[in-house]
Length: 436
Image 1: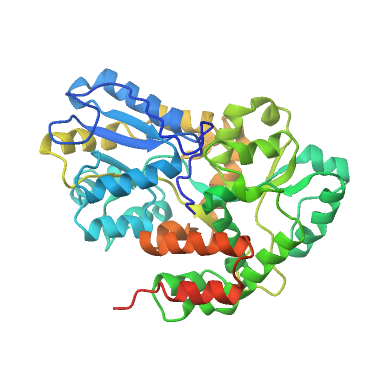
Image 2 (image 1 turned 90 degrees about the vertical axis):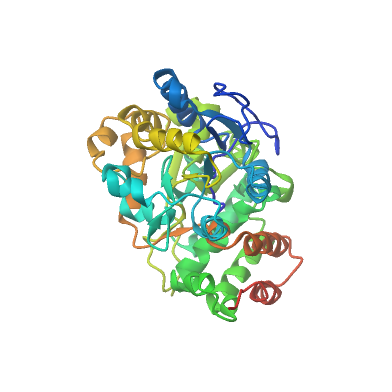
C-alpha cells in the first residue's frame, strides 16, 4: 500500500518539502552537471535518512550526496515525471514491486548485481524476504533503506478501557465494537481517505484473510477476470458494510495522511483504532511522545475472518523502502551512490538510529539490539511479525504497474464512497488486466 514507504509527514498536506543537507558539486537537482543526489519522503524514517547523509557527507566529501525530502503524494507525482523526462536523482527512493519492474523494463535504473557479487555483505546483511522486493528477474536493482513496514492495527488503550472492550480478534468482534464506540461519542476507526491509499490496506487484509495470498498473486500475474474472485467481491461487500455501520470517522474522505491528521485522531482520543503501516509509530513518537510514554498505544494484527482460507500470520504492507540508482547517472555519481550504499547504509549507527526512532531495520543478527532498545516489546513484535510471516504481501499499488495502481486507488475510493458496487469495482478492475 502505497502502502508505500509510506513514511508520513506532519507537514502541510500535499506540500513538497525540500530540506537540502549539503550542496554537492553544484545544484541540488539531478540534471546534467549536478552532483550526486537523492530524493526521499518526509515523516517516518526521515530523520534517520537525513542524519545518515549528514554523517556520510562529513566523512566523505568526495562522495557527498545532496538529499531532498518530499511529502508522500507529491513525491510520487514528481518522481514519475522526472524518471520519464530522464531527470531523476542519482538515488531513487521507491517501494519495489511493479513500479521498480517498470523502471527496469524502461532502462531507468542500474543493475546492482555486480556490486553484490563483489561484496557479499552488500546484500547479504538483509533479510532475504525483504531483499527480494528489490529484485527483478533474479537481479538486484534496489536495496532496503529503512525499517520493515507491516500494516498493524493500532489502538488507544485508554479508550478501550473507557468502554470496557478488548481489541478485536475476529471480523465479527470488530463489527460489534463499532456501535460500542459510536455510542460513546468515539469514532471506531481513523482514516485518511483523501489520500486514497490508506483505504487499500483494508482490501488487502480482507482479501488475504478470506482467500489467502493466491488471490492477489493471480491478479499480479494478469490472469483474466482475476478481480472477480469471490474473496475480492466479499471483501468489497464487507468494506461497504463497515462504512454503512459508521465504522470510520465522519468526513474520512476529506482527511489527509500527509499532514498526520489521521494519526492525530488516535492519540488525541477521537478515534479508537487506526489501521496503518508501522511507519506510524515513529510519526506518533515524534508528534506525541507522551502518548507512547504513557503506554496508551496498543497494537495487534488484523482480525481473522470466519471460514477464511488465509493464514492469520500473513501480513501486508511494505517489506521496506528501497534505494535504486539511476541508469542515467554519470560514472562519478554512480560510484558515489554505490559507495554510500555499501558503507553508509545500514551501518551500526544507522541501525541504532532506526531502532531509537521506533523502526525495525530488515537486517540479520540484531536481536541483541532489539532487546536493548527503548521499546523492546514493540520493536521485537514488528521484527518477528515480519521475519516469520508466511506471506508478506507488498502493497498492491506498488506491486502493480503505475497505470493499474491509479485505477485501483480511484475505484477503491469510489467503493468506500458507495459510488460503485462491489460488482462494478471488480468489473472496472478486470478491464485493467494487461494481456500479452
